[in-house]
Length: 291
Image (tube, rainbow, N blue to C red; front, side, top):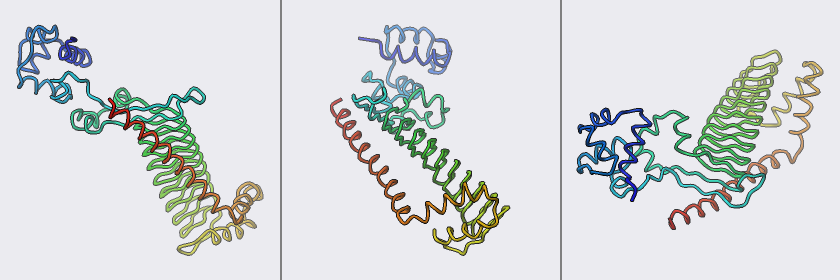
């Protein structure tokens, strides 16, 4: 049988560049005792084991039963598309992470990535997630949803993308409480063309608007009123702005099907993500139970 305790102690020393004597001082034992443990020639008492478990950020139960802690649960489908699994899920074991590995929350992002792998697939779900459809805490992809999100279509607390939405949104087209982009919409909108409550931009439309060309909206304005404001500005702005920004905006928004098509598209993406994630979680649960 492998010397589980000795291996754990040796790995800890090597990661932290400690000698056996330095480790012995931490555990209040002699360096000869540490040497015996690492060689499997001895075993510590229960009080010392508790100190070792705390030092190694491992539960006493795992240490006594010689089990490596399960820091995450993982599932990836065998079906591949473009050399990526159709679905890849990596879910952190929070009880192990936060209770027995308390330093995880305070560790650097690089250290976290060494502990938890990145979920990579067409559909990916994880603490770190990368894929065509990506869901998690730190995400990137074509369609990306996360706490910190990067993608062509991205949504989250802090987002960066071509089309970006949520609290702090940065992108070519940005929707959010704070929207910053070429086209920005939000409570506070900053951009070339900005629409919202408080707006600042070259072309600004809002309750309070500041810019080269501005239009003041009444409170609780709707899409037709915003379209009307754009129509009134067409005669004031340079022709290139009218041709490449205002005219396309009015063409799209004046189409009766536009709001329904946009909402239907977003709902379909959300529904698709939910169905795939539910299917993957059921697979993951089955694997965990069998394990």
